[in-house]
Image 1 (tube, one colour):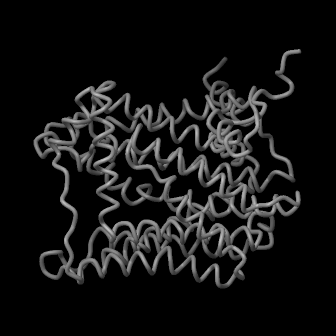
Image 2: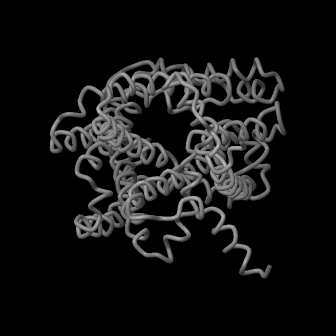
Length: 418
């Protein structure tokens, strides 16, 4: 096998289980977006939160890293391109999936509400187990909260849903961050770096669970964080619901001029917002309120610009068969979103905590990035091979059983032994 045959062989493995058909085109591009969102989760968590850089590292530890300048560059690129972008992408896709479930339930003539409540409760359970017993930073619990709102309000007309989406995703979080600077309040006391490192590097599972709990509970006692965070998630839920109701992914050709226009506009919006976010006119010392307004405004522009860029870019690129071959390599990993999401956290524990290699506080982004690339490549190949033999991912299978209350077949019919 020559040098040029190997990449093509791997791509063929990853795309062959889900070869495109006209009927499944919508699902494929959604799974591509899910796969890309998983990559942004991996980048964000491994480069910063789970590796400890820089929030859970001392100044001396940061200075002792072998490539501090390169670490800063990678950190800033991640901040502008990926950090928290996974949250808005996943929230959008969850709202879209919510609409698909409604349509499916209506076609089958079954009760949607009871099924969706079960799905939300299972999601909440998985989220709580993940956050406290595996790795802090879970988002599934907030999907449960936001999902309850969707279930009540999804019948509103498209215009109201879109207005709600914009208000909750951008106006409320921006206003919250500004009001936080102007209204006197007591912030929750932080946890010292030494205490965090001591717990996670202790090699004790019980100490890890206790620290996961402390970090998670810090967010609950801060209403400013809670309101802005959940509002942002709910806003993108509604945006995904709106995209489903206007049939965006089934009527792509009809909406193509608008998609192209949004994609083009997203570039200057992203660039201008990023500039204000990184280089505000006022410093925090000169005028804290003015700084916070510009900082928040820039961040929101960065987020909406990049979201439109990613969404429009993937839709436009997916129309070209040669490019689609490579994008479809993300389909299997996107079909196993839950399994791969939890797998990332388990591997993070084994890499960064004392239960494993104990790399917390010892590696910077430049050392973590090669690990991320290799690990995500493994997830893509693993997902493709798994779906050759099984109908769904292992955790997705458990989820189906928990929601339906019935045993579900896992093996594909072609591989069932008689």
